[in-house]
Image 1 (cartoon, one colour):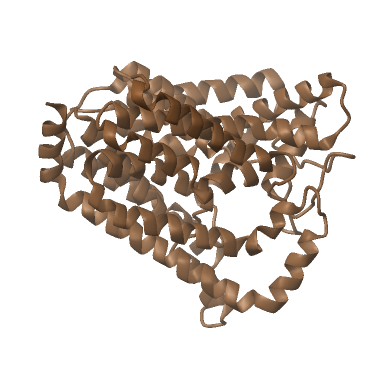
Image 2 (image 1 turned 180 degrees about the vertical axis):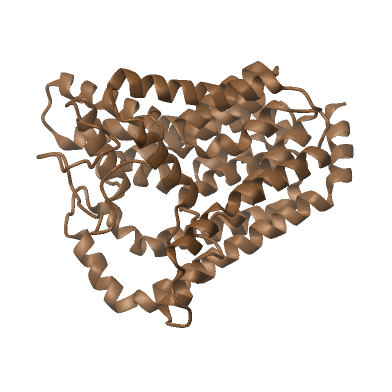
Length: 429
């Protein structure tokens, strides 16, 4: 797969613009919880700290303490991201420059690079199958306010994980797919839902599945052993990821909203944990459905299967955070650009309501100014008193709409399976 000659200048220009749009926000914005964690995490990795323990503020580098009384400042990821932040802090220390904005800039670079690489891979994938749609796919990703905010402003690294998944999709052979899917899982555990669809097709690919699951497992265990971290942290990390609940960009936000209106009592811890596990049987069931529905070796069958399991995850997960939409939007970009342009009427509203939720949930993005304007969190508290009821309503409506659109997309995929196979065959000729 190569850049189409006639598109080369456009592609270079778009990649440059997309990069600059993200870089202009890189050093002075960040989420006061997540990005602050990255700041503390990089320091801890270079000063004998345990990333799975409580991470204290770092003098002269920390900019926020927005964790509250119920949440500890700790991470719930596999060791990939702690290692990355540790390397970045080491680079920052070796620079000899004592400027926290430089540190923030460096922390954003792998995140932004992942997002730009993902955009380019989307372009390559589409250009190899439907060249006339490739520039649209590239522009859609690079210039979307949603993706810019998540990577360049928020500082979340889901695009890195999805980049590995894209390489897996574009690879030939079960072992290669398993390797790249495994790297995606190691980067962030969400791509675990893709382990079966990317490696097992037509009852083959057991080796690929073993690699996809084994690679992040062995890499994590080896890191824990070498670093001397307690293995109990692995269980805590996985448990947090599996059953995590709270406000959600989905219909599940109704639990929070109805409780806020005093209509519904808060669920018990046991009920909450059970609801938090619901996505697991849902993903397994729809993985089986996808396997039976799209059993061919076509690119179409693979992408549709990945979309099905992604939608199952987003519909049934008790807590859907904004960055989870990255996985859906990347796959849907391919689907719309190559095979099902009519589904753009579902994709564009999904991106729009996700953006509405993102802006509302983060108080008009004011909290992202906290690296250079510490009082932004106080402004947020004041806004909460003034517009709290409206914000909660907007979150509930936009999150619920996102779920309904997810359901609509899932129905569209499953209804058009026969037509999709025909389309895939025609596309390959």
